[in-house]
Length: 191
Image 1 (spheres, rainbow, N blue to C red):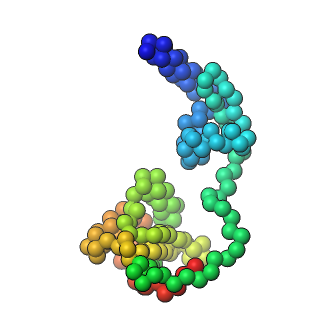
Image 2: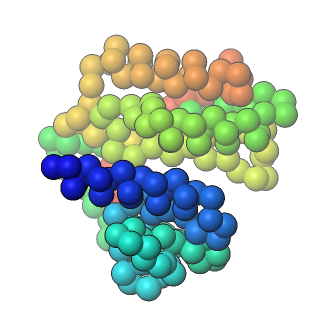
């Protein structure tokens, strides 16, 4: 027990010293910087995608290697175009489309707010199968929110409206909700 405690103290000492060594990052710091898990960083090191060194029992990532690393898009690359599908009768898909104007000069602030929402795992809107918030560069003062709901997961109307109201409240300083136009549709066919 005492040996394990001593080893942990030694590792903590190394970690604190590493934070002052220029050019190297702990696995935890590297993971936080590129937005992945520590386990993913270890996988990148093992696959040779990131350069790293071992100091005692610790792995440290070369900062330059991390800076130069470009993550590829998640998932696999499609090799064929998916066919059309008709949703099953007992699990229909519904679409909510909301278009609204941004408040003047709030484009950058919108992006900041959306990144904060993502970072905090907020506004997941129970019952949604997909959520999109889009911005058309040709219409810089407009934002579009598209929500895809599945009937099998669809919460009661009041719960769904409360979740949408919370999203509107969180974005009220950047989106002029009084300009919003909303449409509800049932999906007939999808890919």
